Length: 399
Image: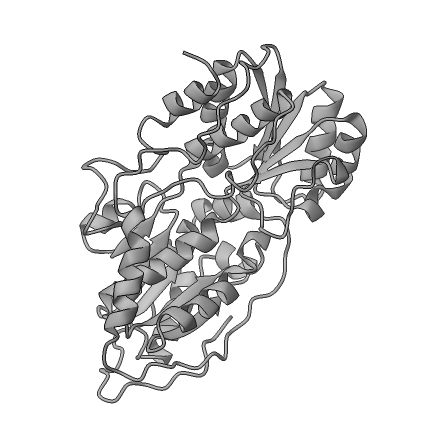
């Protein structure tokens, strides 16, 4: 299990109290993890030193607040404003591929709605997330079934390589959403035509760090949770540490890597509690996605740790209320439904011989929720910008 190294306690910091936090093993944890699994490797620990020198940093706070301002306003526009040159021809067959877990099932409804708006047909293929050959096999299956376009989520070029060879030979474009930034769409060269919203996890982590900078007056010490088994997470820690060093010199940074077996066993809460006891100067914990925070608030409470604040990326509906009750000080929701519409938008552009605008699709607009701009009462997710469906339809010349 990972440990955090290289910090020194602030003088006068109170000792952590209480017993070890509860170990939480749930089917939900395993399902979410399985939905993201494309590789397996071990966890690790950081020896980055805590660089906090005390005091505050008004310049860092001002700059962080400036970066946050667009995310604290109402999100009213989608990422594109270039209309299609014509209404796409009806009758295309789209195959949508996702892992056979509940968290991924939410992709099907927006895919159905978006493709139906174009007069296209949709079929869904479910993958076994524990099978490393599943992405390639699913791509091959879609080709054999006569797909015109293929959408696939949470995979990588490496995991899809055998299947991409088949789709490329058949001339069937593949459109990925939510893949790692290292997976670069090269069109006919590699058979992959998009990697939509691939910047989200990097951007959301940076914006949550900005919330920490503002809340701590530019002198916070953060523990960033990571899961390096997932390719999409590979660049997150290094990117976050580099940017925090630059934007907040008085802030401290530590990371805690969780391996897939530890995550599947629900060991994150225990590991975080142990890290906080070992490093009592840490006053913030940032979880870039929902699974990393499952059971964590309860474990910290059980351990008597009440002076550490939590920040969360991609909260699930059960975690969103935690913003109102003070469990989390900030959350960055991913606009899952609008991301799917954006993926279909790129298919529509390709069908007309247009540029699919990969750079414009790399980050769909989303808010960062905090006490300054909380979600509406009863809101438990963020589907997309206000009126996003009508905005996409307008670009597609559909009334």
